Image (cartoon, helix red, strand yellow):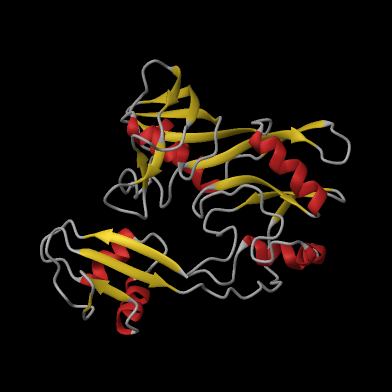
Length: 298
């Protein structure tokens, strides 16, 4: 059981709405179910989902553990860039979630990989087998997956030691000044929207390097290197310096240029777990991103 202790900060807000807003892993329907099951109290009393809260009211929710089903192999087409006995390097398309999660029980990259490499099912983490780092659903590009525990341990160590080198291409609003720089700002949960991240005092250390690759009128194409690996790090940092990623509806705004965020995991370099040999892979920009750039250049 997990206990959440929250404080109402908006006058008259519904109880179920507050829970869904401040508890990152709960949808509104899940919040309502917890309240109806008597697992939520307001200042020590059980209330209805529609109960209107006073500012400062203390809300305590007891969240039972979720029993996650093992993901099944699914014949989902994915592009394999490289594969050996230890790893798979995948070129993930935009729109594909990396692993099962609430709201995405199937149709993920993990389901696709289980069909391509059934040995992944024997790994200890049955929900995210082989996953050592992630890409957002709407970010395309390169991802390395471990096929056995030894490789998983080796890649995890390289990530902790910052020996895995990732380079992204991002189209942003405006042109950053200076044209090359480092963003160092701690990242944590947004204080008012728990489903977002933000630059916050007391957050986890985060560092991102960038370089302007091309200026395109009111936009700039950047090469971006995240030194740390915080959730949504590139998107949060670029938005924090006033240059949000084009098409990022969470940290920026909708765009007429493209239907998703212009962020692509372009290059990935690391040491092979089997031999220690350093390798580097590159993924060309997918069609939708190339077309967006071509429209700007015209």
